[in-house]
Length: 71
Length: 156
View 1 (cartoon, rainbow over the protein chains, first blue to last red):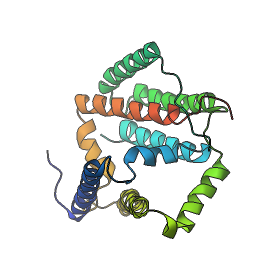
View 2: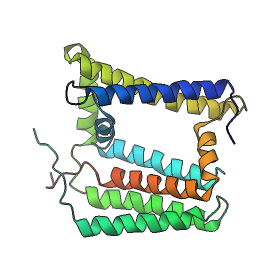
View 3: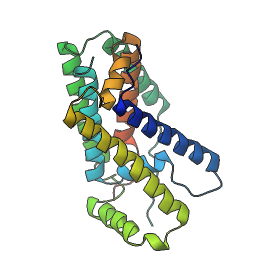
View 4: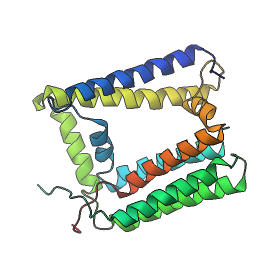
């Protein structure tokens, strides 16, 4: 069943479209420009104990919410 | 500047880890969100991930929190001297990540049918066993990366 189109769904679609466009730009510019890709963003988060701990906490909370609370 | 070097890769360890992820995901796919098995396994995996991060990262975290914060702050302060590509990238990533987090928080706080949260859409996938199993495997894969990536070879 497809989710109903409500105002919130439109915002999510815009955000998802923006992510897709940005990833396409990164793929197109790979090897030519110096744009920062998703791997470098994640690696920046993993550079210190604090940021690694925070992103791991977010990962754990997301897992609990998705697999133990959501249908 | 000291750059982090990738830790030595053991193919057998990776194969065992991949087999464990597949087995756990296949088992998790059969569980419901209300089951004790789902609750215990997710909680145990989160605790294990934090434990493994501490054990693997002891002396191998590539920079201290203070240095990381100082470098990040320095980047923001000196953005005019940075390349246009670096500034545009940082700006776009900040807007996208901030936008997703902020909109999800707004939708969660408002609790309205017209503002669904991100997990509402994910719920359309996890209600099916295949979707739940695949998403669980992806979640475990991401967790494994977050625990083990960006480590130095030598203790600093």
